[in-house]
Length: 379
Length: 254
Ligand SMILES: Nc1ncnc2c1ncn2[C@@H]1O[C@H](COP(=O)(O)OP(=O)(O)OP(=O)(O)O)[C@@H](O)[C@H]1O
Ligand SMILES: [Mg+2]
Image (tube, rainbow over all chains, first blue to last red; front, side):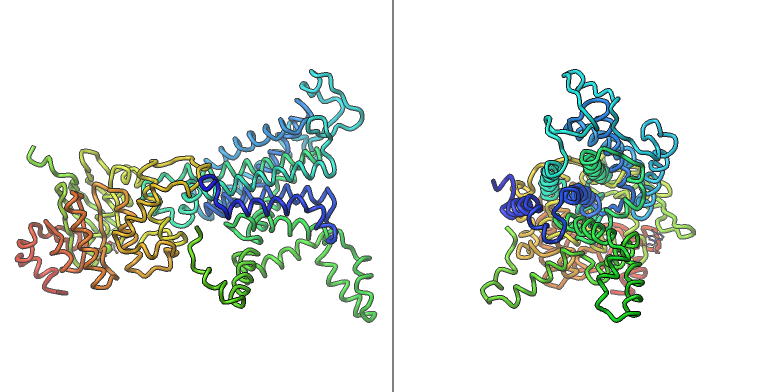
């Protein structure tokens, strides 16, 4: 067991699994315990965990990862259209295609580092986005987006004589993946993704990625060819993005080009930084928080606000409604931006740094016996 | 051949930075198993010479040959894999990682080569490399700091750790750029002892040093560099007695 996974890692994995699987229960009081949102928590959690392998461990900031997310969605929908409505082939197909795509874009972008690398990834992603709208319309169905239709060939389904009545829906071994089934399907992948990320971070390979982030020059003078390391991290995180994109297509079989836009790429960067760059749990928490607030805030409108502030004196309430309305609905990005700025200034290590600080304060004011543990090596 | 035991040959190397002739017509031969010291005033081009050897800088002309292989034109990681390690003047370390991991990383390069995709293996199961790193840290007297973050070490400790990072690779040629700068007298003496011990194992070394005590304790041969040129070389006694050296270097600061 010790050679497989350390005790701490195992505890973390078990705790994480428990938290994820019980989400429908503990999120209900927060008004977030419904499948649609829970699925998105899982999907963007996967996206962020994978992004962290590149950005958090290796230190390369990509501004184009939404491209791989989008490619994953398209690939999955094509698998539903051409092969079968079963989700597993779609996932495999999506991960492979997005990995291949990441290999090409990563190979080209990694010829530069720092800001030039970021700009290159951004440029490639915007190119993909524009291609999806124009030249590649036969593959992407342009602005309408790629959808399932009754007339899709679905050769594998046809071969075993399976046919559907009404609108086709993705399945797993015949079970439809809507609602909670869809959530548990995505949750399984999030837990697997988390486990794999843990293994990567705790492997010699993961240590090399951290060393590249720490001092790439030293790595080179120590005998390492750093580029294949960075490229591997890039491809792995691209495959994670593809997996997440495919899951979004599983829960809602429609793929549109807006998924590849730069705002979507920026969002995963925000998630990772908000939660804590380089930590395992942080990016997932960042993803959950952003998706939660997006859901709550974007649903608010002037009517709800007027009701909410109605206890204030008249006239004053109107001003408050006017001001707050700028931060909700379509304006929720303003709130996100504000929260992000506050976090980066006061907690550069993200929410995980906040958690560590609180834990440190708690330990200091705790019983004196607890103090002696503080300096012990973590082994 | 008479010079068959020459392991490093810097042949007619020039290096220009714009108008500055940082290295001019350098010809340096280092014998296998010997310690070759390079001394000279600030800005003489000593670090530049090491940069050319390890592939950080390309020479403007000339070439560097190591054990029959031309180094010039190769990538730094390829040069390291041929058996050349370097301690830098400003420590080049992994500041965010622990001291132990800093020393383990070079051992992986030695064992697994320039790239390995071993992402499903647990670092905790690499006991051989960890023990090796712990021995190395013991040798440089830093085992008690193994779990510290490398960036928080004192300047002298960083340098000792960097030495351990080089030694764990058992390089054939070790390049040391002022390895004792920033160290206490006690740590300097420990380092000298350590370097003498390595020498008895047959490792070839090129050492740049300002501390004459260190130079004369270790060097078999000394080259004196001033304004990019080698103005004298020979045994420590020959160099000490050379009037040109007295004037350019020893006479001034020491
Ligand atoms: N990359 C570079 N670009 C331009 N000039 C450089 C570069 N590296 C070194 N120089 C210049 O070359 C000259 C030699 O520098 P070098 O660092 O080799 O000296 P040094 O002998 O190591 O001195 P010190 O004892 O101070 O370390 C200096 O004038 C320096 O400014
Ligand atoms: Mg120097």
